[in-house]
Amino acid sequence: MKLKEWAYLGNYEFYTNKLQLLATNELSPEKWSYAGKNDFGILKNYLSFTFEKLWKEREAACEEDKQKYVYIDENVSCFNTGLYDKTWQPIYFYCIKNPIAGFQEWRFTAFYNSYTIKFADISNSAALDLQRASYFDDPSALIYDIKLDIIPQWDHILYDEENFLRIPEQLRANGKEFCQNLISGAIESVKKRIEANYKTVVPQLYNDKIQLLAPLYLTNPENPDLALVLSLNDEKTVYYGHTCLTTEMAYNNARLIARPDSYWLQP
Image 1 (cartoon, helix red, strand yellow):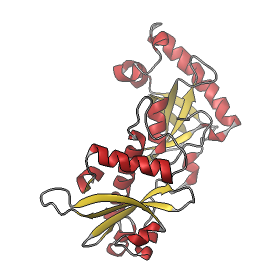
Image 2: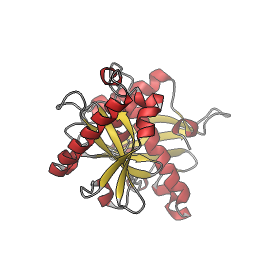
Image 3: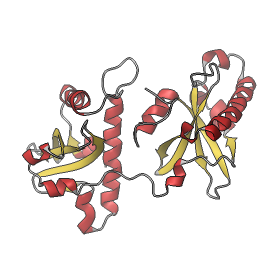
């Protein structure tokens, strides 16, 4: 279930204004828009992704637990965004029944925290029971095993045109073999960075599985050009480097789970 299919979010101006008020007045300072924009695209993606995960958990839960993921009664619905305000109170996404027939069943009206939710038509106990989206059961999945090798998927990184274009233009001009050699060296270098600081890798979620993002420094030793996406194989004997993302793409993906706590992946 998609958020925009489940609830009417209002027109662009209404929803963007609500997000701006949330980001400016309630949340700790954080970049929520892509470079050169002020549309809160990162925050929109985060909320949509969070709802989809909670809806899946609701669908899989037994009947008595469904309300813990997305609360629904005859008049209102609500879910825990996983965000906290400046005083560390959880933020809730609150909807009322859509009065207009033939459209989404619910209509988004406001964000509340655990105090202001008392002004809404949902009990405090029901709101406090709402769970944050859970993305992993095993915390070890977030840590890179430095004993394991990385096998890059070169055909995808270099020979898929969309992916190849993510490599800086001045490097692409030298050809694919040159880029492969440069990226290979950057992978060996980043393994040393990870060994020195385990926080170098940042988790992201893909197809309900945790992947790790590792920085690749190709043109500047201070600022990474790309992020290599790493997945541990089923036997847990090697990491596959599936593709390379721009750092903007990497930040957006990582922020769907949590605010990245890494020196290199900053907005």
